[in-house]
Amino acid sequence: MDLSIVIPLFNEEKNINKLYKKLCQIFKKKNVEIIFVDDNSYDSSSKILKELSKKDRRVVHLHRKKERDLTQSCIDGFIISKFNNILVMDCDLQHSPMDIKSMITKYIKEKADFVIGTRDFKKKHIGLSYTRSLASISLTLIINIFLGKKLNDPMSGFFLFRKKIFFKVKKKLFGKGYKILFDMIYLSDHKTKVIEHEITLYKRNSGDSKMKFKTLL
Image 1 (tube, rainbow, N blue to C red):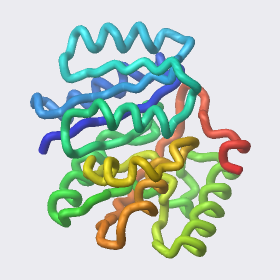
Image 2: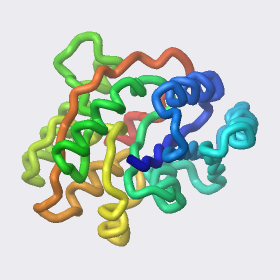
Image 3: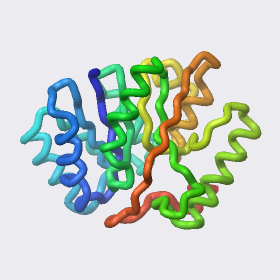
Image 4: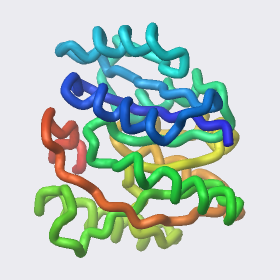
């Protein structure tokens, strides 16, 4: 399956090469592109990505110089992607590349439009602080009550989807913040097939989280 992997990032100099090597272990063929969308980092992320893109043609380095925004970073990556299937994941290694194969298998077998890497907030070892976990649970509850579609983790940053859906809803997107998945799913029609796949969310070992209380609010 042709696949564009979109990875938004900001100041992830310690994680880029680690993630790249793990992805290379899984995807050895040429029908995959890895789009790193750098949200104008001020560490050495840009330098590392330039070197990677020279070494491996599958690596695309998109350097944003606009206002920092995760959703806009994803959108910019979607627009330049060349394949019809897109995977979004974080660069901080909290999302394990080992989950990707299982997500792809479900995506193909179920003929799904979305496969969401779902976090189980009931597990104590989940790689989020208590505040972040509580906030995500509260937001999910509010979303499901007011918007009808019952999903366990509509705020996930790890998901696989068909690019055509993005272009169908593109003009209606709110286009800001941390909710690009939620935005696309709830703007798509009722025929959109959404599958959830439970993942393990690992703790961040380096770098800082970009999710702040103001953004959650």
